[in-house]
Amino acid sequence: MTLSRIGLVVHGGRDEAVDAAGVVRAWCHENDVECADIDVWQDGGRLSAREELEAAGDPDLIVTLGGDGTFLRGARLAAENDALVLGVDLGRVGFLTEVPATAVRTALDAVRDERLTVERRMLLTLRASCRLQVPEGLQALLQYGRGPLLPPPRVRTECEIGDDWGIALNVTALNDIVVEKLSRDRQVSVGVYLAGRLLASYSADALLVATPTGSTAYSFAAGGPVVSPRAEGLIFTPVAPHMAFNRSVVAAPDEPIGLRVLERSGQAAVSIDGQLRGVLDPGDWIGVYASPRRLRAVRLGPTDFYGRLRERMNLTDAPAAIADGEAAPLWPVTTPPPGDLAHLALPAAPGDTSGRP
Image (cartoon, rainbow, N blue to C red; front, side, top):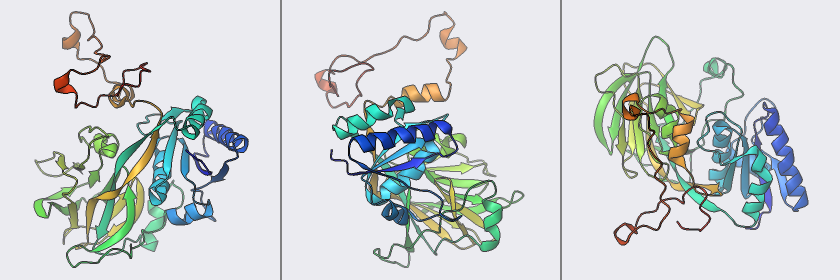
């Protein structure tokens, strides 16, 4: 592909990320590609994704240098501009990043030479009964130990406003949208609607809607299912609900999930991919939908999601399953599928260079 400009999102607190950024800049200089640092804090504040991209000259490739948190920052930018995003792994429990820091130059060569695949990941978007704002008195408390807050989401003026559908907010989430309590001694009470029908009213620490990509993040920590990132669906998970039913529910992509703060509840915070973006009062509601957009993530080879799951989560075998002292053998699928299974889309086996899908 023709690369004209690369945008860098760097975890500035990690020396290896700063060093890797130098490698990217050197590669850009050698290949006559413009390079700009983006998503930086300006004068103690934060810019919207649109403002950050315009300041960086609208790059066609976003390269993130850090862990999954840094990748999420880059994804917010890439989704705004339909740019490609490449994650360089410098984190501890990474599911989103693609290549190690030692392979940055090789990865950029592969992108330039079009030796890549583009993986499309589902995103979430948001409508609400009102604009999202963080009350001024809460900002200092809620951003304690963190950098400046992102600005409140803008209203998407190109979208229709309906009495039952609220206003469309300029939000894209790769991992999750969360409604959570503000007070430690008081749970938030929320009516949860799936596909326009009341599922139940919950009192809980938080209620979250995740994408399949986000199933291994907050949703997983709250007891939600692990879902292949290639799947599509909305995963609703309650966090510490004060009720017997504490299961996750996986809805179809065309089944929106509504969260309405109930009359006797306290205020509730709304976080988008881990970033606080507003506060809801009793009576306010949000609707979470599958976005028509998709994140376009660069992949340089087959993604071994389940192998990564075993490694990152330190999965161990049940003692009873290996009581005979022999570990389960590997099941490498190295030959083409038979005719009745030709519809399968299994990834290539590790080390397979045949190009077989």
